[in-house]
Length: 264
Image 1 (cartoon, rainbow, N blue to C red):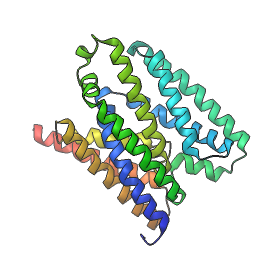
Image 2: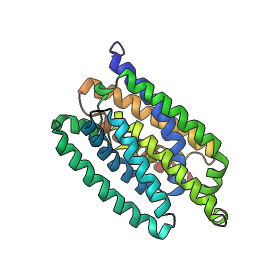
Image 3: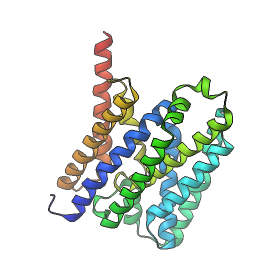
Image 4: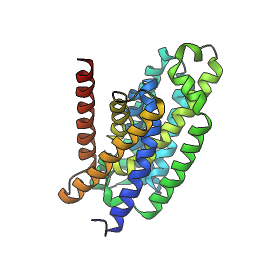
């Protein structure tokens, strides 16, 4: 299996994707932004369609659409009371644009399916280079704002007293989340990106209670899902996103069962 270059690229990309999803996933769960993550996954499909329409790399279109929507939602919907409405409005707008660009591009339906569900065959060396570069950028920025982001995510009452700084950190976090969604979609597909951004972290919190512990265990769970999913996809020729979602779901059910067992 590893004699094929595209599989080597896919496993390498999955390693970095697991790191990103572990770092961002912990804060996604803490900030209860799973709904927004799901929305970003839909918007990323629209961005990929835009990239195809322009004749460039779909990741470029994903980054443009997801980052732009994150900034809009982070500023317009800074208050929780307006956030859900803002997410719905911008989600409808960008998805509509994505459908339009896909129709104008006259792209084959198989390519659109790859965008939605992921394709291990579609990973190239240039994609891996872009992924590594973006991963390094996201990790550096997340490290720089880590203390403020932790305070903003786990102490809502205290963070509420400094609304201006709170809004800025929220916007930066949403931009980082949008970038993570864009680079992850290449393997997992835009429909199931949130599976890696929410399920591993949700599972990890049943076993450990520190941020670093959750991050490390989330990375392990995400890596198990992606690597084992890639292997099953290779031998069955079925979408890798299905296997990743199924494996992560099993891990979550085991985590919930463990938590119930401990409580009893």
